[in-house]
Length: 232
Image (tube, rainbow, N blue to C red; front, side):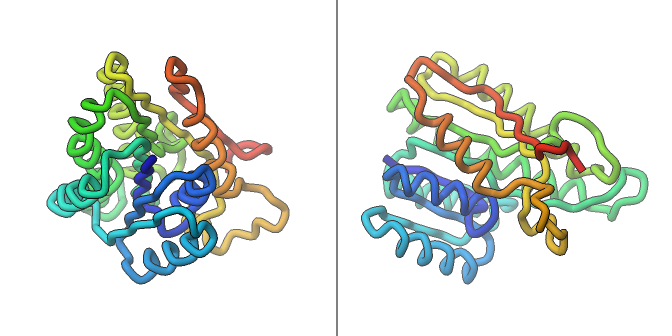
């Protein structure tokens, strides 16, 4: 069994890798920063010596690098799990955010998932099995102060997920959208979480892996996970 997880050198992506490695999957990791990615892969490989942990640095906001990464993944086998987690967060308001934010966030948060999934799908369809997870956000569901282009891109990712789910119903391939609220990752760097106000990356990872273990005829379409005390 093979699980591909993008944006997996830290945060939610890294936590998801750990859960699937724990479940016995061979893992393919991807992130932009080769040094951080290599360190994360080595750490997880040491933790799970019986699992093959492969990794390749790539900027998935670049279509050609997405295609190259997909080809490299397929050389190792057809994935059973694909987690589209690569993404960036840039706060701002539509009226005054930095010019170019929308283009960058669409490429990173939406096109990365779109092109990687398209490259892998023909091979997954041949097997008539697999599970694709798209890590969306609460920002995919409603507007909020400072959401700007980030929220727009996450709404688009949700739209991608809905259409993908509809298309693949008859192909034996499951599709699930994950909508996390605030999670203690680099996006919340500097936040005092000593009182546990926001969630841990493992909370999201455990739910993703659990959803992958259902019977072939069951598909969890959406998972919304928010902090106990609500959104910030």
